[in-house]
Image (tube, rainbow, N blue to C red):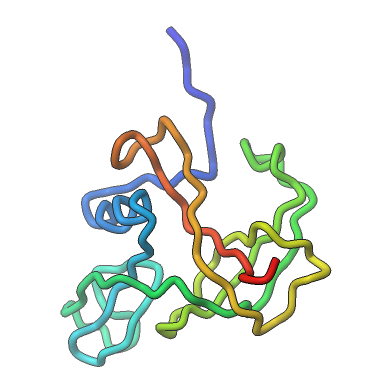
Length: 145
């Protein structure tokens, strides 16, 4: 019997978050929007974190964001992050309003600047649970790097 290696970089989709992860596998970022107050939020929740209404629906996000802050990670002992160091952990402001934790890819740290324009992309992990055996995790990339 073989045991799969433990990974700390993949989500564990459930019935509620399945639409989010299935959309990501198709290359689309989803948000939740409140029907009561009109505000978008991320991470996906079954209620609005602003007004507590349960009148929330999924909607496609534009995929545009600006860089709020970042940190370059040089050491991470959790698999498979150790093989990825250094990597850039970041917080971005989505065009729709919510802030999102993510990873920046495709750009050297020296080229990063607070407020720079970013675009969503997806790191695909084959053989994971999701549509067609793939999980796609949103990451962001500067347009000019």
